[in-house]
Length: 238
Ligand code: ZN
Ligand code: FE
Image 1 (cartoon, protein in one colour):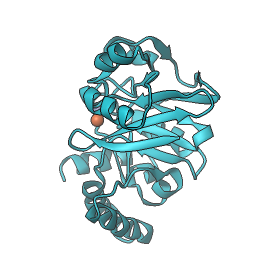
Image 2: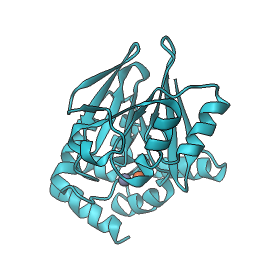
Image 3: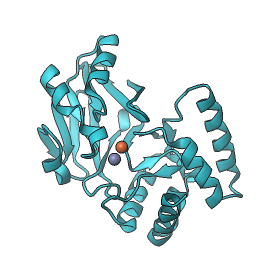
Image 4: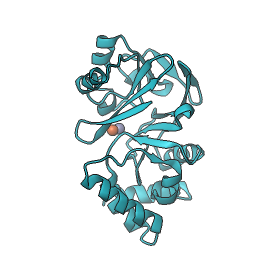
């Protein structure tokens, strides 16, 4: 079971529960106290923290929640030194046993060098942090276009119906840019209208799916790393 709630200005908080064991993970910790309230509201006890990358809006609540619940912190090996309180490190492709669920770490460098995604086949879901956003992608703070291109390709190879849990609600801004890249893409036009309708009602545009992003996301649709880099630069200046 996965639940999502808005956190900080434009982040999402995510709770993942494996029902057989009752294990409960938060994916990243944008706001420790807010996450603790959501856990309480749902009668859940946090057992794990899964971090996607070291940015403050993703690890800021790590130590607070670890202290409060004794939660085990899991993160990418590549970023072990930058994730507060980390207990278990996983390399690309390694699997973490979460009760009856297998959680696969996928190294997705680009936004940062250590960035990873967590693929949970039992939930047909992937938590992508700041790698992919609905109709967008994360800024290249540390990585190269080639690295982000490789990361996108890894995610694109997941089953099309995989739900993609992006860490921010950036969709309308991404949509406004995406239509300038692909003005003739009718799937994109439809997605933009659907996103506007959701946001008008205050509803999230997350999760999206891999199949949907392959139809509408200019960064996932870029055929080469060079093209992805050009689109990223254009978005940075949009
Ligand atoms: Zn970030
Ligand atoms: Fe972020």
